[in-house]
View 1 (cartoon, one colour):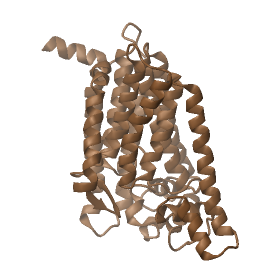
View 2 (spheres, rainbow, N blue to C red; view 1 turned 60 degrees about the vertical axis):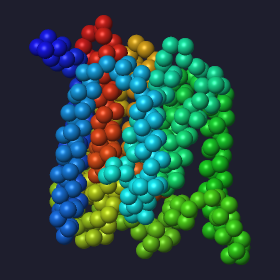
View 3 (tube, one colour; view 1 turned 90 degrees about the vertical axis):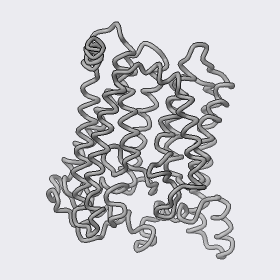
View 4 (tube, helix red, strand yellow; view 1 turned 180 degrees about the vertical axis):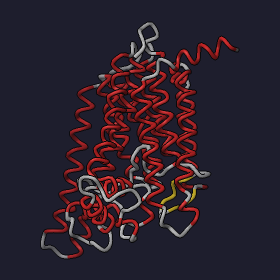
Length: 393
């Protein structure tokens, strides 16, 4: 028993320190600003969200340490079982799931869509990195099926943002594994054209002088839900519906801009204190606005540097790994982390449509926090076991 513990802690000494430090730093910042965004709320349960966020962070940190000492190859080998469990959970959501804020996404207090993203990454890393791995058209269509089923189940909830974030993650893994390049780039081109046409239709329907019936028919042709159409309209026309669909975005931009260089000071943000930034979004989707208002440009850059540290360290681990399975898993996790970070901050400052994606480690969300920490724990396992004969980082 003593020898096993000694060997385990010997493994932990070879962890990537930058990755672990940046993850812990972002989690601490998240707890601080979840407390700040909820400190003025009358509901005691909302005021205590920071404690639940902290508990999730501690549990996730412990899980990351445990997983770092285990060999990631074993877990990748059983990734199909984790994938099937996530599919079953997603399939149960429409029937027995909990409805919050107009969407049925929760099952027994957790969001199955979050671990499903990690399950897809693990499964693809195993498929691409195992012996006799496929790389041609067969691998392409197998990837489309493996990623398409959970994406379809997530869209039913509906959760367009979570489904969309899977697209760059899967494409990055396919690109890194060199899976059917022609088919992949054809798919990318078709997706870009379809997105451009959809935005063009909504723009034309809003700007062109046409009868109301024809305008409604054009919008209906996009097959988007009414709230999704409104978000795109607000993105294309920022001054549209400032007291409705565009309200949160405008208040978020005011909060970010009013922070200045050094910010207004911790617990002194006015947009959420006075209720202009709604409590339903200030602790999760728009928490970056709270951070930018209180910590200013300096605090925002600090958070970006911590995310840069995670991305750099994760890609460094992938570069040093000696096999495709570990490399591709790291690429998938880092792409997922970057996509969440970029989209969340971009929508906060008005550069992208509102999608409802959380900011990793900072936005309140227990399932998402645990999922991301487990993912980085597995990246640490790649750092330890993917280069067993090399020297310490």
